[in-house]
Image 1 (cartoon, rainbow, N blue to C red):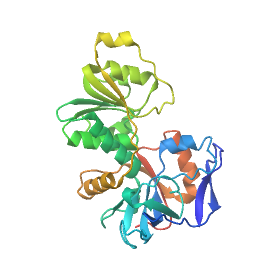
Image 2: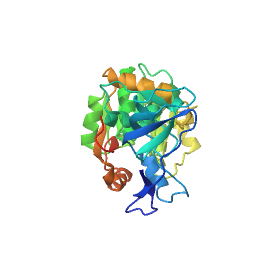
Image 3: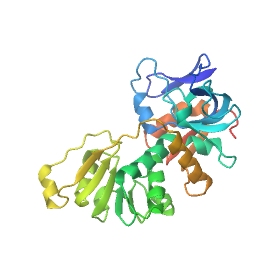
Image 4: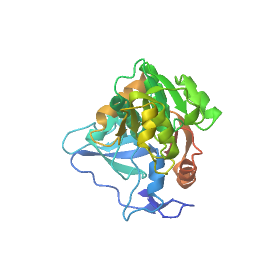
Length: 307
């Protein structure tokens, strides 16, 4: 079979290679991949790939071999999955605790856009606590996680202010429920009960300054790739006793959260924002655009003719 492997070349981050079809563990299904979605964090890993790196964590496709231990869906089921690695290939082994069955009304392209970004959004909102009636500031809002967070938080009753670089991207966030859209953290009209921060650098300190006393900042990324500096004394001017919580989404099982996302999409309550769809022969090009923030929401690559 064919799979994409890292090259270590920033101008052409992946290339095709021939590989043996994976042999699933007893608690894994073998999926014929119809679509996969790279994440911006994966583009960073490709800059200096470790030996043996097989990228790919968000896939959708058809189960062609059920799990030997009897868990999970049967052969022939359409699924979305979140394997630990190896998803950018014609076939992928996926643990049964990290898949969800797809209804007919959700396409493989829509489904592939769900796993990492959608799971992160769900778990971030749980970390933030009850948001109904609370003022929430979201930085880096135009990526895959940001679109899901905006729609989910607004539906839960939060008053969401989204920070995004362009007016075009802001218009879509308003459609998804954002009360306000600004183009820099300093333009946001605070104070806020909760900040969900993914930019790092100077934006983190500016967002922190916009909290109410005792408010919470959940730090879930550093897209600027610039470390943040926080001055203890600055907090005395407003957000005294603020809580800064480091957040990382990871932790199997992922299946229950995937099932929740699938149910929300099927019910018309969550809308994957897919800014680019292309054949997987164009993966290297799409990865560069994703790395350089030229893609709104998610990018999805297709293998063959996905359903």
